[in-house]
Length: 257
Ligand code: ZN
Ligand code: FE
Image 1 (cartoon, rainbow, N blue to C red):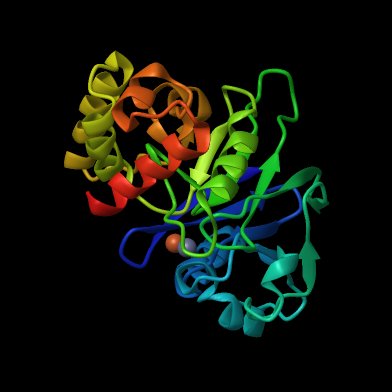
Image 2: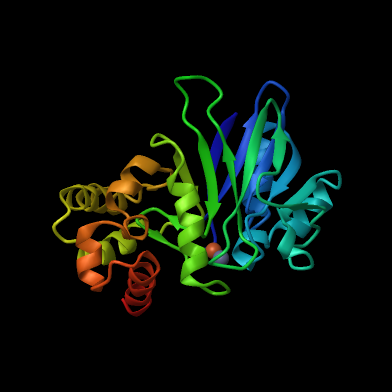
């Protein structure tokens, strides 16, 4: 399975999963149809699945037009997004599995950004390979999504699930927010040497207009404040040792940043 990263809208990413042996493709969060159609035609491939993480327009905006071109494509989304995702046919919940080509993805229910948000995780298919996590607007490189429909406790729970995946998991999140996220991180975890090193790398990449996605879960655990609610530095910043309070305060601070 090859993964193509398509920059869409202002700062979104859509991901196209391609199986070259069978010529089929699946797309994660098509904000727009055109870039996906172009990529499919370059690859001479047929779209069989649309995998949506949540109902926001910058994640489902291309669904209808893609279905026009590929009427047999199956649209997946979370069970609680019923009625909010154009063309949705499959209503997924925690622990469900979906197939693409010779791979299977596991579904995580990760409410917080929205009340229905899900993530798709493809475990590694060989011992050397990495797993692939498509997490929409739940976990970002260096940050996490805003809480539009969920509570801090729900989001913490969701991020804890994602945090428990293997270190070498590749994190395919839906926005290029990394630099801004790390600039915030520095204000709450400024003594973290891994964070300082990362922000230098990311500044360089962004100055050359390079994408910072995918990220790796290992580096997220070391530098992303929203996976580090149990670290003394962040407990001291937020003056709390309670996980949910620490997390909620960090999220509030980021909202004001
Ligand atoms: Zn969103
Ligand atoms: Fe988004």
